[in-house]
Amino acid sequence: MGEGTGESMYGGVICYRKGAAAGTGSNVRSRPPEAADAEALAALFAEFSIQADPSEFECLAPKPGKQKFHLFKPKLEPREKVAA
Image 1 (cartoon, rainbow, N blue to C red):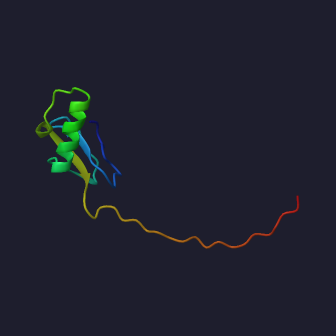
Image 2 (cartoon, one colour; image 1 turned 90 degrees about the horizontal axis):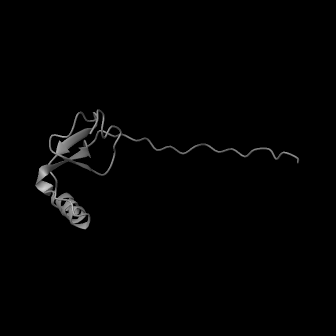
């Protein structure tokens, strides 16, 4: 993984082999795989005959509360019709 991996990430996880991170984005954190992550990795490894163990992996996940979104409603005004 290169510098800035996961930058601007606001959902999901990125699983990677321990020690493979050259750098990460500022709004993500590294954590061990949760049970669902480990199950998904094991299924993926089995499906594609990959010799790996989910315990060899870590996950990047967004830091909680880091992303702040502001939803807005644009003010729409009717336009004059243009003659063709």
